[in-house]
Image 1 (cartoon, one colour):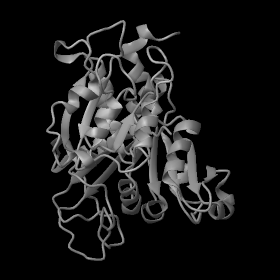
Image 2 (cartoon, one colour; image 1 turned 30 degrees about the vertical axis):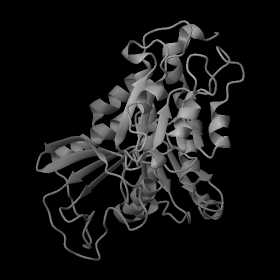
Image 3 (spheres, rainbow, N blue to C red; image 1 turned 45 degrees about the vertical axis):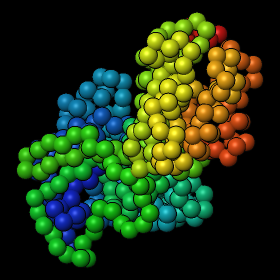
Length: 377
C-alpha cells in the first residue's frame, strides 16, 4: 500500500517540551523559523494536526506567503495544502479557525466519531476509518483518494509519537529552541512506549535565527510483513544501485543492500559489478560479509528485484544464498517476470524456508527503469 512521504515537524525547548502550562501558547521559534515552516508547508500536499492541537492552539494552518501561494497556483496546485485533522471522538468545535480558513479540509475519525461529527460535514470531508483509528488506512486514503504525496505533520505530541512508534515517519524536522520549561506537567514531544530501534540518520543541521534545525530520518529496518519508513529508504537505495549496472541483453540490472537490525548498512552490491559478467546483486553484497557475522540473522536484504530462485550461471541462486547466510527478511520492489526464467518464484522459496518477504510495489517503476530494454511494452 503506497503512503505519502510523512514529515514530522516540531519545535521543542532545550529540555524537550512543546509548550508550557500557561494560558498562552509558548512561542519556541522566531521569525526566521516561522518563515522556514511556511516554506515547508508550501512544498507539501497536505498538513495534519491532531484534535488536541485544534482544541489547544486553535490554529489556522495556512501558507502565509502570498508569493508561495501564487507559486503553488502557477504549478497547477491548490492555493493552500489540504488541511487534515484526526479525532477518535469526532468532538471538535465547528467554530474553530481550522475549518474557516484556507482550502479543503478532511477529518479522519472512527465510525462512532463520524456520527458525532455530522455537524462538521459542511466544513470538511468526514472520513470514518472503522471502529478505531488506523494510521495506515488514513495514509492510504490520503495517497489514493486525495492525491497526497507529501504530508507535513505538525503535532501534537501524541500524533508524533504514534507515527514514530508505528514506523510511519519518513523524516523528523526538529527545531531546538534556547529555552528551558522545567514544568513536569507541560507537554513533551514524545511519549513513552516501544519505538523502532537504531539510531536515526542526521541529514542536516543548521542555525535558523537563534534556533537550531535538525533533520533526521530512520534507519532501522522493519521487523515483519509491513514496510516501514526505513524500509522504503533502503529499497530506494537498492533501486539507485541498479542504475549502476553495466547494461546487458541477457540479465536484469539489480541493486541490493544488506542492513542490520539497528540500521547499520553491512554491504551493498549490484549486478555485474567488478567486471564479473554473471554476478548478481545479492550475491555481490553477501560476498563482502563474514558468514559468521552475528548480525546476519537479524538483518534485512533489500533487492530491487525479487531474489532469483533458479540460475544457470552459478550453482546457488540468490534466494538460497540469502537463506544460507541466515537472513530471514527480504524487501523487494518487483517480482521477477518470465523474461529469462519461466515461473520464477524466489519469494516462494524464501517463504517456504521461514523468511518474510515484503514487496513494495510503489518502487516497481524505479526497479524497472534500468531494465526497460528487456521488458515488453
